[in-house]
Image (cartoon, rainbow, N blue to C red; front, side, top):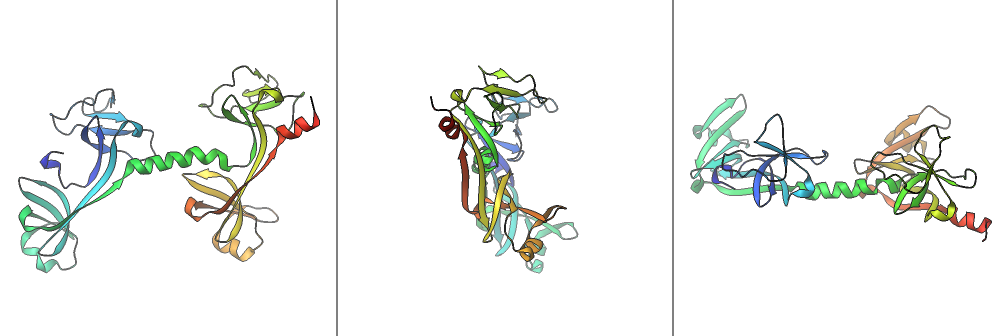
Amino acid sequence: MPEENEHRTGRYAVYNGHTYRAFGDITADHFSLIRERDDDPVPEGLRTDPHDAGRSFYVTADRVAQWYSTKWTFRWRDEPFDAIGSAGGTIHGYYTGQQLWLVSDALEQEEASVWKGSFPLSEITDLTEHRTDLLAQWRERQQKLAAANWYQNGTFARYRGHTYAAYPTLSDGRIRLLKRKDDEPIPDGLVRDVRSEYGQTYLAEPDEVDRWFSSKWTFRAIREPFEAVGMHEGEFIGTYTGTNEEFARKYLKYLKQSSPAEYYRTFPVTAVDDLTEHRVDLLARWREEHPS
């Protein structure tokens, strides 16, 4: 990284061996690489931002070698500062301490409580980088999102390597598969059910699928029982199945006006225990009922 880019707060990504300033977060489909200087290489193979052509380029996280946020801190006269950059042997920073009188003679006031100073690098101590690995966070999030479909209740059928939502009963002796998402593959070789009002239902003979099953997931959190109904942003969504009304009213959210009342809450993965799948093999049951 060039000297004038050292010791700055910000986000950066390494693409094709070069470090670029980056803008975006792990929840987006892509983020932007920025050519801050004229001698920054144009990142090959990336689409440029039409609003900032030649300077900003779109990239996906799976194409970068590193992606991280960084913040530098240091001390001068043993007082703390947040660095905002360094160049030519001088570092600049904002004062973050509580004893302003010890350093006020070397600072400039920018706002009511914002003080900035510039110091020779040779005079500072405890120069420290605080780095967060955004690429690791993105990968962890992708894993959680990929697992989300497995932590929901329903009936499913696996056909040619893909698991589709399915109906729990047969229609004219065939299993009805549902293509519910745009990115799900069309189940080639199956006949579309023209009677379906949804238009994305396909019919499979039981012997054409690898699996057909109903599934329900349960877990415990805060030592209380829940039924999993899916995941959101990497956290479990659970409806309460216990009997402790005081606990439910105090710690959970009210789901709907019904009798009895229903409550739910989201939990991070680390807060969930005894995650258990309760599966019924519908294909095995059908084979038992229809021996060849």
